[in-house]
Structures are given as structure tokens and as C-alpha cells.
Image (cartoon, rainbow, N blue to C red; front, side, top):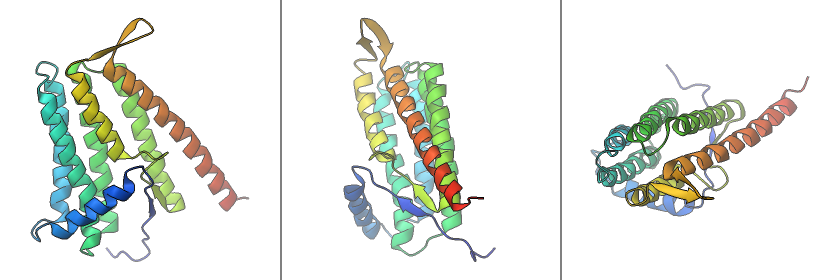
Amino acid sequence: MSDSGFKSSRRVQESVLAPAEGRLLRWLAARLPRWIQSDHLTVLGFGSMIFAGIFYGLSGVAPELLHAVNLLIFANWFGDSLDGTLARFRNQQRPRYGYYVDHIADSIGTLILVCGIAASGYMSERIAFAFLAVYLILSIESYLGAHTLGEFRISFWKFSPTELRILLVVGNLVLMSKPEVTILGRSFLLFDVGGAIGAGLMAVVVAVSAIRHARELYILERI
């Protein structure tokens, strides 16, 4: 099938770490061996998420496995962030294939990761479900925005998946020594607090983005 008529959406990446991360990714892309292809990096990123979810589930009885989870999160960043950069650096872009595979892999990987956290007991099932549901709704909102307005937003309010990975790694390190926190005299799971805050912030982002996009589309297609 020809790519005739297909136009890639404009990528919007305005996170705090985006400038430094972009320079690092381009530096890595220029130095990777030729036999390493973007598809290899995509498989690395996806596989890392799957195994991170598995090790999260096992860490409930073996907390030291959280170190392995952190290494897998780094591997996920390396594969997931570098595959597109490498394709662009080598002028081997496949816009439709790359967009589809990257985001379906992210969705499945996130599902397994959050299920692993819930299975570990470090996060209650209700909070895990709420976080996952809002995350997937936010993803859908981004994909719809890319399709209807030609703008694919990777970051929201200076925050992107890279910053989220860093927070998760730090949380895992704290988790090994302090799985619970006390707030106003009550004890809560650390990841329940983090998950509830994360879900709440993402819900606000969804609401703001949905209203903004609906308004833009209404103006563009006013009756």
C-alpha cells in the first residue's frame, strides 16, 4: 500500500528534560552499530516493559527484584525513545508502521506493568485500575488529537514519559525501605498515594485537552 496522502502529525515535546534527552538520543543514534535497527529497539522497549511487569509482581515476596525493575525501566527508555530517533537519523522512517507499533506496544506494556504493580501488593487494585484507566484515556485523547488536528502531543505541562520513568525508579528505591507513608495520622501505601496523585493530574489533563481540542474542531467545522 502506498503512503500517498498520508501526513505525519507534528510532534510536540516540551518536557523539562526534552532538550537534553534529544541531544543524548541523537548522539547515541550516530554511534549505534549499523546492524542494530529501529525494530530491534522497539522489541527491546516492549520486552523490557513486559519483564518489568513480571518482576514487579514477584517483588512482593522478593523486594530486591525492584533493582531489576529499575534496570528494565532504563532498557525500556533506551529502546522506546531511541527507535524513532534512529529511524529519523538514518532516514528510514515508516510513519504509519512506526506510529501504530510504537503506541500499541506502549499500551500493552503499560497494562502489564500496572497489573504487575497491583499483583505485588505495593498498590491496591482500585488505585491501579483508576491509574490505568485514566492513562489509557489520556493516550486515546492524544491519538485522536493527532488524527483530527495533526498535532501529536508527547508531553503535558512539561512532563513526559521520561520524567514518569524517573519518578518510578525513585519510587522503587524508596519502596524497598518505606512501602507505606503516614498522612494526617493515617497510613497509606506509598504507591497508592503516588498512583492517586498521578491519576488525578492525568484526569485534569484529559479534561483540559479534550475541551481545547473540541473547541478547536468546533471552530474549524462550524455549521
